[in-house]
Amino acid sequence: MPASAAPPTPAFGAAIDKYATYVGQTTCDPDAKPGVIGFRDLLKAEYGRADLGMVRACASGGQSEHKEGRALDYPFNATNSTQAAQAADVINWLLATDQYGNKHALARRLGIMYMIWNHKIWKAYEASSGWQAYNGESPHTDHIHFSFSWAGARKQTTWWTAARGLSAESVNGDRYDDLLAVGPDNTMRLYPGTSTGRFGASVEVGPGWSASFNRIGVGDTNADGFADIIATDTDGSLHYWHNSGRGTFTKLANSGSGWQTLEWFAVLDVNGDNRADIVGRDGGKLYWYPGEGSGNFSARIFIGEGWATFPRFAGGDADGDGDGDLWGVNTAGELFFWEGNGNGTFSSGRQVGSGWAGFSGLNVLDVNGDAKADVVAVRASDATLWRWGGEGDGTLSSAVQVGSGWSGFRPASY
Image (cartoon, rainbow, N blue to C red; front, side, top):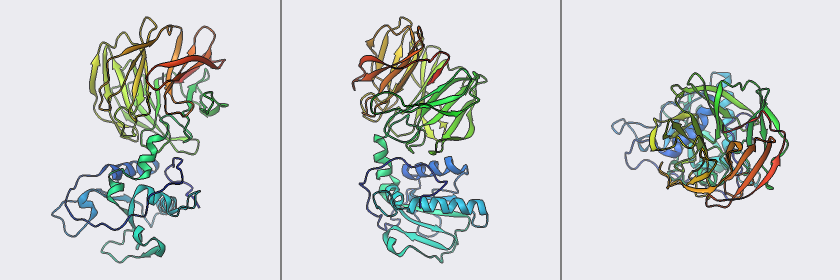
């Protein structure tokens, strides 16, 4: 049976990785590998605890994948009923048979080579034997040890490679980006994207989204295939809501301070690592805040200046190449497009539209799942919602009305 409370799982096709073979430590390279970091981020987002280590010094005794940065010790205490239940959930989640009949599906997709927990070991290379007795020096009763294949450690397995094709702003984990909006009563609602390019009936996400959250963005911060929420408060604090993958956002966390200087921001994956970043405007200067996963961001990096004339902008993947691009509206109501280079820089802007002065709530998202980002905005004169289909190169098709009655609504990002 699937786990009842484990990290959320994106939708996958039937193709799946082979079981990891055993490859022990052969070198010493104690830098945590990206697949191990990504898996740690999934667990931390769900359970909130820091890991107990991914690397080990070369001079320490014995052979260990920790010395190659492809192992993780994550705390689960076998004598604590809550944590023991969580450990069971994670293990069931990893070893469950998927809808296509693939046994141990997620362990294979993540490239897990073996796991040790509470006196037992599961080996991918002896999967038919199930859990076996483990008599090593540590009984592993205070943590689960995960060792990864090199493919899993390097993010070359289908958990990571298939995730690239998923939508960046899909709240429910399907291929269609969804629109979140805060209504006049400060309740946030979800409008699911569909293959038609229109939105389905809305559902309530939750109340309490007052005007103190002056900037809200949506994006997948931890590469789990489910979009999370990032918001700044008028006091300059940055907040993060983790998408549980079960229709709720949980674990409200303060992710930093000093954000009050940003006059606008967009959430998008700038460098194609499947973790949403923030691009923010501070006066006339534009900055990139690289995402570290689970709502954490690195120190900002200067992108360029001259952005004071673009009070509104939004980001998404225009051409399906995996890295984010930008659209912005200048003070004359002209729409410009900047193609992302995948390294925090953008090409020179080019005009792709005009007549945008009367539209608010500029959003970039792939509504119809064709891997070409669309633009959605509210026309102020009659509170109608419009969509411009992405052509894959930054240009847009003719506008189509996709909603009405949007007076007083604040579509995210805003």
